[in-house]
Amino acid sequence: MDRKNASVGPVPCGTRRILAQKRPRVNESMNTAKKLQKREICCKRNRTGNAEEKFRNINLQVEYDTYDPKGHSSLQLPFLRKRSKVIEIVSARGILFALTQSETNRRICFLNVAPDEVIRSLFYNKNNDSLITVSVYAADNFSSLRCRTTKIEYIRRGKPDAGFSLFESESLKWPGFVEFDDVNGKVLTFSAQDSVYKVFDLKNYKLLYSISDSNIHEIKISPGVMLLIFKRSSGHVPLKILSIEDGTVLRSFNHLLHRNQQVDFIEQFNEKLLVKQENENLQILDVRNSELTLVNRSEFTTPSAFIFLYENQLFLTFRNRAVAVWNFRGELVTTFEDHLLWHPDCNTNNIYITSDQDLIISYCKSATGNVGSINISSIFTGKCLAKVSTACGQRHVAAETLEDITSLFYDEDRHEIYTGNRHGLVHVWSN
Image (cartoon, rainbow, N blue to C red; front, side, top):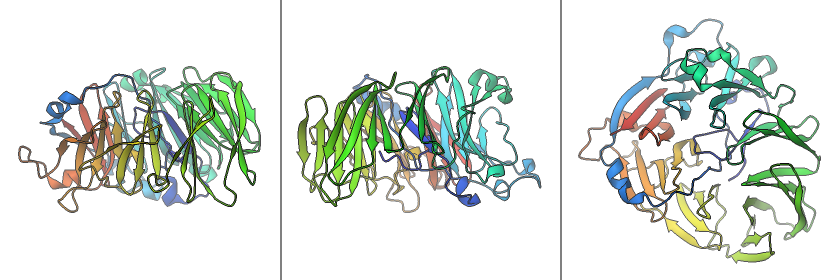
């Protein structure tokens, strides 16, 4: 998936990158940036059989309003004084966090936010059961990221200020970033000021090692390894594969490129390297033995985003609202029936993949015009197993609850789907 101006999104998560803002536009600084999202996936599988029954009677249970008209004051920024769409939802141990463009609310209590603070993204750190917030501040024109961690237990006790700041020594001004890698239990930061990448332990935030090289163009993270992509030469791009644990170089090599053709993407998934240039075939390289697989450009068109399914050795592609499943032999495995995404930009805050990697839950287009539907589909077969829509005869779903959904999350333990909309309303759907 394109790293983009990434931000963090719904779990199960893999790698999440948050970039500092390029310039201080107030109306943009509060938006969740585009995100890279690789999902952490478990090896459990084949529960699709009972999914249809499991989701059959799901219905609206509760509505929450994140807008608090009484809480506004003249000291607040202008965009804090109006309703804001919900851009991200995270659930952790029975507490629901809903991030709007301007502030953070949740089901049980409110996270205290400074008058000039804008929370850019949320990350639930399951390694130490805490919530990490990534914020920007008006004092520096919203140009630097600041991270803070708070134990879920403190939040539950009504003590959200009991947390502490993270990575205070790092200069995370644009184009600096912080990336949370739940798969490997690591944090990657980039200080653009001195071109230094640092890797921290996600359990205790201890610095593990640093990488200093101004020629690095991008870093991709995969289970157990990191791929360093250097600035391309005319006929090749230098690459290095490092151990994520200690930064040891496992392999260095040059990958040949067609001259004068731009690189659409370079992605790594375990031992597989995916390279696609404009108007060229997709290359799938096994870095262990240099075996190369070519996929005709007419069969594989450059997608706007990827999600990798780690244990199943598959990956999802997103293009023009459509989702497809591929294997690493370059074969199309699954296309989905009745699963046309509502949002064309493939905002993964509107997509959830279950930890068993068998289901995809998305906000989709429906036959009712301006009202979408929540579709639950099998990743293995592409079949739509269930949906929440106004057209479902056994439910009495108000159209407004399925209009303009801007975020979606599924809590697998509680079997609840949470959706947020542009009015700042959060709806809870369950049996």
